Length: 520
Ligand code: DP6
Image (cartoon, rainbow, N blue to C red):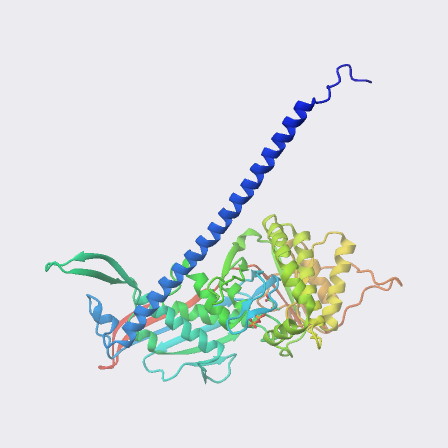
């Protein structure tokens, strides 16, 4: 149908007006872009200045404490309530459990090897510390002659101050001295002689400075295979950091302190940053060359997704052949795929993973987790010479998961592998029993009972009739590797480190008498 009143074409005058308006619009857009650029620059400058101020504040604080430490004056002497702690022994014993964490988006590569500053931000789930943990006891008393440590029941050995553990001890002592000796310079006022004075006060909940000079005895053990790619360094270093921090009263107001404490745990092992918190945790890579912003940040609490389950399939307990540190350095030197990952892929995965976690979208999260794990091991293959963490059993498990997801069309199962052959299968409570059954059928040795195959601390389970997994084109059913998985641990998301014991007493060593006792 033709239009009865067609719009007349614009006149030449209207044309020129439209053109002029277009020009004005373009100019306005350019002005807006310029203004935005200026604003961005100003904001960047502002955050630089704020960082600089923070740094100066810290330096000032440090300087003051250093001066106090070097001077003849004891911190206590400056206090109004002078304490004479000479001859007193402050005995404290703290035991804590710190969890392992499973990285969904993995950390691989370091921008600073000494400080363990990562090339990429990573994201993980912290697992229940009551099932898998490093348990660490730290004791202190005036009578200890050296800092010493025993790991997994081995003999006590002196802590090498230059080792990663030595660094954690040094950093925590330093933080404790600063926190407890923290000087608050109150406003200036005028005294009775008309002289300007500055009032100095100290933080509350103060422990005597001599407490932080007492030596430490550390005893730590893991209830799972050490160094077989099961995040033992993460929970171990987080446990050490948290236990000493608690001993030094640094865990009160934990929300405020965790960023700083995670920078200390990081110097023990990168992935330990994420074990300092429960639930879903992001380790932000940060930009600062000193790593002050390379910290743990909570993403979601552990109760956000309560029915998420983890089935850890222990496929080998021997120590890994190449440590993560050495492997990362080799990958950085030789793998071009790693460059691609850190430059392009990680940020994208992070954005999508966060969405999947927020909306509890398992199929989406599962696929991202598997892709990330596969990429890590592809980088290990791209490293020259290649590094192989996976074994035959690991590869069969990968195959099993894809067949299961394809056959059930539910996409309710995912796998993840760190620097070792052990698989972490991730699913939800609804599918857990089926999956336990499947793993046992295809990967347990024939003569193993359920009680021996599933770890004693694991959550309750039953094993019913597994679905028959189809095999290859020849229609032979899927076959795993009998005895490939030694045992399984079923676990869930959990809280961060927990204190299980804390006793504190003050002993008068001059008399040999106990003068005060406080046990919590
Ligand atoms: C594959 O934290 O063990 O588990 O910082 O050198 O101690 P260091 O490395 P580490 O590396 C863990 C690597 C990973 C991935 C991850 O947990 O993010």
